[in-house]
Image (tube, rainbow, N blue to C red; front, side, top):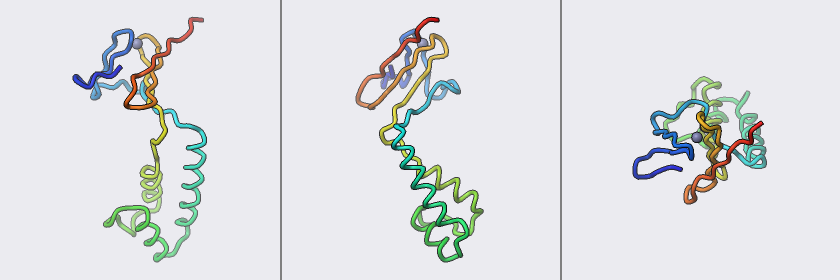
Amino acid sequence: MWDPETDVFVCKCGLEVKPDEAIEGTTGLLKPLHNQVELESLQATEIAKLVGADEGVRADWIARHFARGYPADGDIEEVILDFLYFSHRNDGCTATFECPECGRLALLHDVNEDWRFYKPESA
Ligand SMILES: [Zn+2]
C-alpha cells in the first residue's frame, strides 16, 4: 500500500519503494481494451488528416491539438509523437505494481481505494 505521509509504497512482503527509487519494469497501467481501441481509432483518424496536408490545413490541425505557440513548421514525426503522447488518456486505467521480491501483483483501480494485492500461485 502507498503511505501518503511518507510517499512510500510498501508491498505486503515489506519491500519499500520510494517514488524516486522506482524499480524499472515493476510499475504499469492496465487499460480497458475498449478504451484503447477507441483511442487508437481517434488517433488514426486525426493523423490521417495531418499526413500530406498543405500548410494551411496543417496549421489548423496543430491549432486544434496543441497549445498556442506550438510550432506549425516542426518535423512531422515530432508532431505525431507529441500528438500520440498528449492524446494518451489514463481515464479508467488501473495502476499496477509487480513486486520484484515476492512476485505479488498490486492493483489500484481508484486513488480513493487501497491497493489490492495478488500472490502468485506456486508451480
Ligand atoms: Zn513484495
